[in-house]
Length: 324
Image (spheres, rainbow, N blue to C red):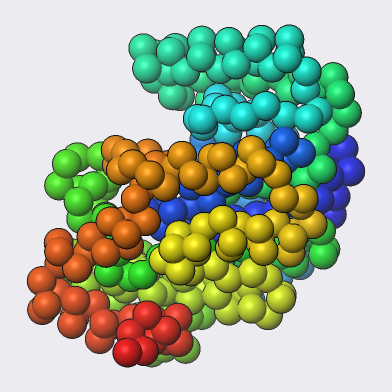
């Protein structure tokens, strides 16, 4: 599968609160990249695909995933195109860039007044007057259960990335978001407890019976990431651990860009330096790496950490965070 304009695709898969917006904006800082931020939020694709698969995706699922990926790559909603900060692009001159940003500010303001369900139907034009991007980068925190079918549907055109954060960091951040009222708690694992990963780990009933919120979040982290991890490893994709990546952001980004066929650019290094100095708000892309990585050590008690560890170390993705 190719995009309609001939572009290839880099797809960042991640659980929420794992640094994926920051990684997405790292790619967006590159002037040759078209970045789409969570286009699957307003368009869940439930008319085509389930969120979680209990068995191997079949041919009809793969064909449906192709149609859905075409929808996602064509998405130009304010949410998909308006995640700040904005960056200058090599394929768009100054005048069209100014017009496009004005449209985004206008629609974002409308969003705050009228609600996202209205602006989700608005499409922001690309206004590309200097050619086309080199690659499209899509970021999602809703597609971990669809990694397998997406990779198969892309027919080799997708370069998948799985971004994983320390499970205690994920749990701590989710609990903090629930406390301050900006992130919903996980009410139930639902179909996630019936996935192939849950079956292989013999964990379905245990996960469903978890009533303690940290334990339920730990099961969510384990089963959702295990689903994606298996598919991405089988496809030869890229797995990034947020904690180690953030500690060496410039060097790690340089290596990642080279792997993805992107040239090193000074705009990206400038963004990295600015975004790793100060600690921003809950949804900010500005993070002091040391604070972001280690905050859970202060926020979670030893007993909670032990319970999280007991759950996630059932699989190698959890074991690598507790090796020592």
